[in-house]
Structure formats: C-alpha cells, structure tokens
Length: 156
Image 1 (cartoon, rainbow, N blue to C red):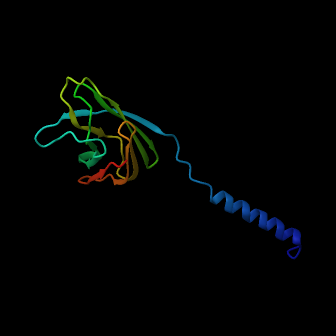
Image 2 (image 1 turned 90 degrees about the vertical axis):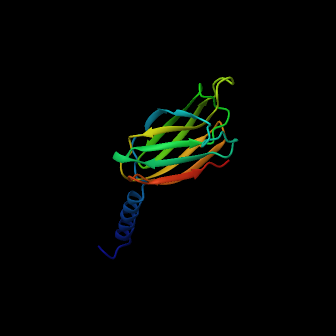
Image 3 (image 1 turned 135 degrees about the horizontal axis):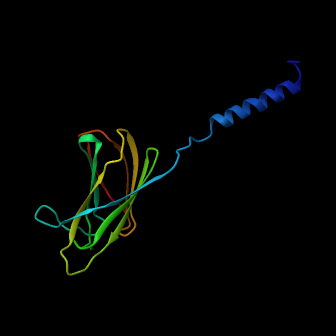
C-alpha cells in the first residue's frame, strides 16, 4: 500500500492542504474608528504658521500610555476653524486621516494642533498619517512606552 502511486498522490494533496492552511494571512479583526477633535494653537513667538509642505507630526507618550499627537505646519487654518482626526485602528496598524475646516479669514491663524490618543496599549504600532487637504503624509513605527517622543516630517 505504501508503494502505490495513489498513496503518494493522497499524501501530496494532504501536505499541500496543510501548507495552504498555515500560510493563510492572520485575521486582524474589526477596525475601530476614533474621531478626535484637535486643540488649535496660535502662531506665536515659539510657533509660526508654515507653508504647505513643511508640516510635521510629533508623538509623545506620557503617563498611563496616553499619547499626545502634535500636528505642526498648518497653513490657512484659522483659530475659529477646526482640525480633527479619524483614527482607524486595526490590530497594530493605525491610519490617521486629517480633516480640516479652514474657518474665517478674519480670525488669527493657527500654527499647530494637539490631540490626545488614550486608547493605545503599550505595544509597537505601524502608523500612517494622511492629510488630504495639504497633500502630505508620513509613515512611522511608534513604541507606546512612557517617555518616548518621535517626530516625523510630512512629505508630499
């Protein structure tokens, strides 16, 4: 029985099925969406309104693994406008989409905005930040551990 071609065909099919089952991609589960409103900061002596294309994002991990995200380099956003984020978390992959409401031209201009991300575990995350309004984006890896600060330039 072990020398027959049928036996080897059956063993080959079973082996191929096992390899196919093992190489299936891991299921990440559902995507969780967090909508965050930013606190706008006026351009002052230490802050300045930058031109589009010179923005950056800074992630600072504080006590309790609370991550503060600072978006610098805003242009054309007034203090009576708004900057908000749609944060999509899928496993350890995060996509952050920036949403801008410019506000009135009579109001002082904002140079930066801050956000608080209080829903992350102490893990390594792959983050993609996208600003469709300014045509800028950045990709980075963040280790959520108290005391870590990471700054990344946004590129076109």
